[in-house]
Length: 570
Image (cartoon, rainbow, N blue to C red; front, top):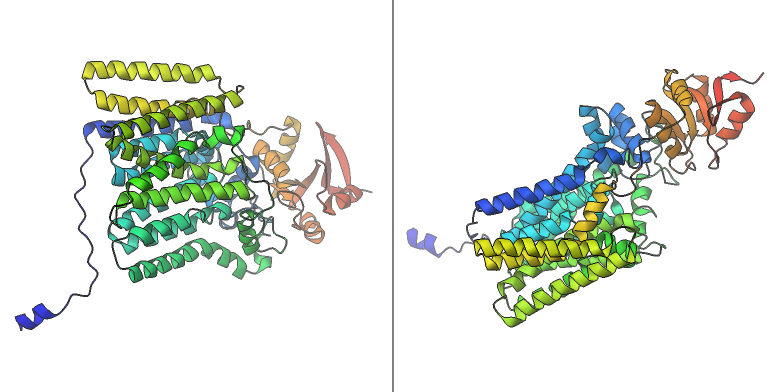
């Protein structure tokens, strides 16, 4: 029996044994702690100066924290007439924080800042697994110091959660590639799908690179890799599609109108001009101009060179080589994202999603050259790329002298070189000191600009919404479902944030959504659910302002003309 048993082949896939991972040394742990504290400092520094950031989203977070229906659908206010013109994924985290800690600027923005710390930690860990601790620290520092990233995690936009989820998906893919682990691969798919609930136009951009890395390098048979990737596709659809299915299957009369859509459809929101349609949009796209360059382009020329060099250096490695797989992953992320940002309907605020690919590629490529530093070709190429990066930073600062003068970069580089080399002379750790010096020189430009962004509030910071005190006192005294109504959710959010009441934004963000209709608004007025109408300009195509002006008495409060919806004209 034993002879027969020994001749039966084992058809189960054989997973390669994983080499034991070296535990981080005390120096590495202190370095990582310092990097994460630096990241937290950049994101949290004087965060109160940002105010409500984008008032439209802040108003939605306030309403979602008050009402679970508003939370589920992402309504512009707790009255649930119309939703924001985006999937609500990124708003859920901020609204949950506001429910737990009370709604404020800090309870809304601190989760965003902490997402940035988590993204740096995950990206650094993913790079460390394939290229060592030095590469992981360099990649994490490059991500943390990218100005677009600092601005993103000091804002209440969707890109904070988007970047974190996509970095987590890439980290899971790196883990999956190591031993063809299906659960890690499915996790990556679920994370990408979840990102689709934050920004459909950017969530799927890195997906081809993640699939390519796994298909090229996972240590298992080709047919099994293909089946696993098909399962990933299912995970993406399930994780990213459940909310859209729920909205589409819900009768329109029992939910808010889907803001920004012409047909009251969540699928239109995902696939239309504001969603995946942006990929092939009619916008001018992004070019590497001064604004884009200072936000995210500091390392782009060097990274493109490092990707080519890295692929050449790993060209003869085994198919399952993890370093080459990571170059395909992060390099593919970089190239795909840069191309789509250049041809699609994107703006400068969308550039943060490019940063993880750049940072990770810089860390891995630099590590490959550092390993060859004893040869003139290795150290010469590395020195040339650092010099080119410093020169490129000089040019970017020259294009934007109003932000940071070039002499600041010179001063920072000189101080860094002096301090590090002095430390090297004392500790006699010359090689490590040279490596740190080169890294800090390359990152001096973005570091200066990132510090400037944190000191000035980050991207598009707006002070706490203010309004005429007499008007806000009037709104606070109503005690209705809506204290007032006005055209446009931007206007209603500003009044709601200033008065701490619920204000109806007729027509959603642009004022052009058919929510509420005139008949619906008339019924709301008749039931006494709203007291005042605040006239703040264009009607947005709605018939409601004209009906209000013809039907109710007006008065002036501060700089605003308001109508008392409880007092019809005689």
